[in-house]
Length: 92
Image (cartoon, rainbow, N blue to C red):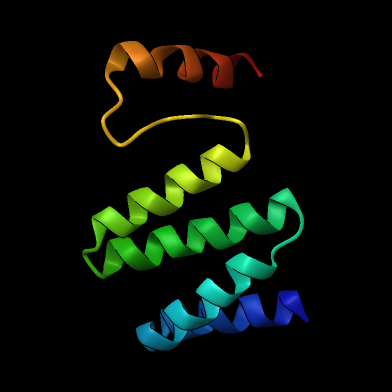
């Protein structure tokens, strides 16, 4: 059911039903169980918010997804603060 709802959200996004896509993706983000599902929903939400010009929401979604993966970045991270996480990511 999750996969079908995700496909529907993507179709809504691609056909311009952006409010419906946002509502469905918000619901799916709360229901995503696996890391892959959470990341997939987050990526589509990032695309949606970027399309809507809501970069603040896109950054919030991205940071939340990263937090789930153990990467702690803040909105105001300096390059000095972000560099260790960036290096850790590439090392994996």
